Length: 149
Length: 66
Image (cartoon, rainbow over all chains, first blue to last red; front, side, top):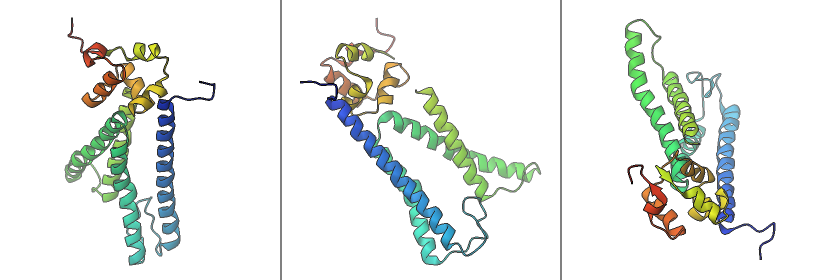
């Protein structure tokens, strides 16, 4: 017998999917927060990872390895794992986003280099290359999201 | 690609979330398929056809079908 509070098996699965998504977001947030806290406590220099002041950062080698592992987990392993559990529409949006970002770096950095050689742009930097990848990924993802909603 | 998913869902009195759960996809995916903004993969098209006990061709039309 159905009541107002009964939900179908499909909606129950949807709620379970939503719970998994929330757990993933919370886990990713904890990783990000952990990286920020460790950096604020452990950085012995005057640099900043998030502002691109990498030359001034000074870290204990053990802390550096822990941070590098955590960054690789949160920025590579976690998204790759998410690809295996998400549905095909979200996967398509993410692939468009990441493809846009990686193509922007592959094409954008050499273009930047020749513009620099021609005196039209400052020298290419690692921070700049990362920023191109990040922002174009976001733009490409937003385009994919808007065009399929 | 045109499809009858919205009509079939209404006939079963299912919400988008209910259908999404039965197909193991997100509600957004169901919405995108219904509005023609996303063409499902072949495995998903087969799952949809099995769920409604129909053939894929009875649900999806590629626009060239007479």
